[in-house]
Amino acid sequence: MNNISTSNNWDTSLYEDKHAFVWQYGEDLLQLLNPQPGESILDLGCGTGQLTEKIAQAGAEVMGVDHAPAMIEKARQNYPHIRFDVADARNFQVDKPLDAVFSNAVLHWVKQADSAIASIHKSLKPGGRFVAEFGGKGNVKAIGRRRRRCRFSAGRRSWASAGR
Image (cartoon, rainbow, N blue to C red; front, side, top):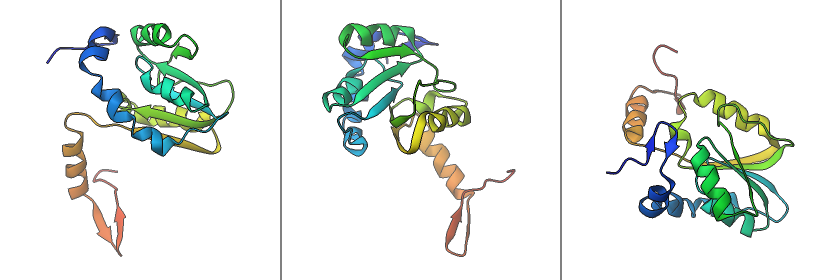
């Protein structure tokens, strides 16, 4: 398989040509997001902007951010009418609270998940939505191992792992 990324230097042509399935699969997630006209929405890890554009087509005020400068540069070329900025999921900030944060096929790359979740939480209005899909090679296997270590008591699942 071709390497579309070395560290944070993404090959945007390869991403759009050979890995379009990443954002194409994410289109179904937009139904769950259900963007409404006038809503403020952040596309966290927007890549080259295809799903950001679909959110904009619904009438939402959307901004896309990605950690990779090459992805943002390409997104700006693809959709010059949308705001795109370089930002890190672990510590991004927004000017005003958002109605929703959307993320497709990104968060499994973020090693410091707690920091990313804290940034997402801080960016949302009270009652705001967080709609995301993520997973990568080995993630389902790790979930299975974790699940086997779960304790079940009184019909409730406790996801506490040994050592916590």
